[in-house]
Image 1 (tube, rainbow, N blue to C red):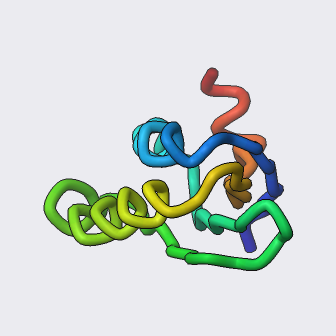
Image 2: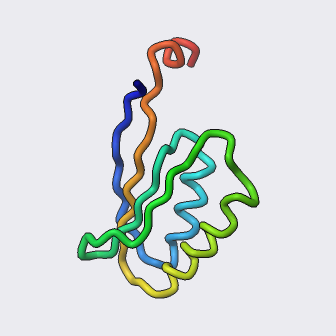
Image 3: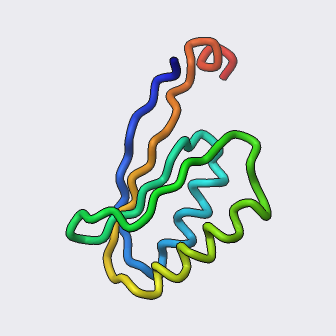
Length: 90
């Protein structure tokens, strides 16, 4: 079983789409959860290795719509921790 850890970013809605795109490009993300400022989950989506491009277009469009409606929000990211094998390769 792979080890994961969570990281949370607080941002304003107008920067939401840009931040999500940056996180997707990083590639070690398993799941992204978007919360409003009171902590209510607005949307969540898993990311699987190798799924890129057109598959994310509808998700990014939905994130853009949410970003237009909210002010401050938080993104919780579930990341994979590097295995000991990949740490030695770095």
